Length: 73
Image (cartoon, rainbow, N blue to C red; front, side, top):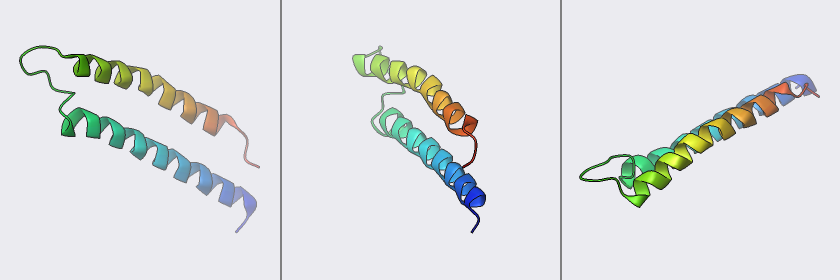
């Protein structure tokens, strides 16, 4: 396989893995551990979860931009 194609496929697989990993973390803590839902009152877990969720979206986008801006080697 040509090096450019291999580097492109590695970049695609890294993007997919990081995105699925991010979604897995957020869905696990949000849905499975019930931090995304506010039942009677807002708890500390809800606040921490939403702060993490809102802060991690720009980090994920920053990672994607940094990954895809580099030229293929």
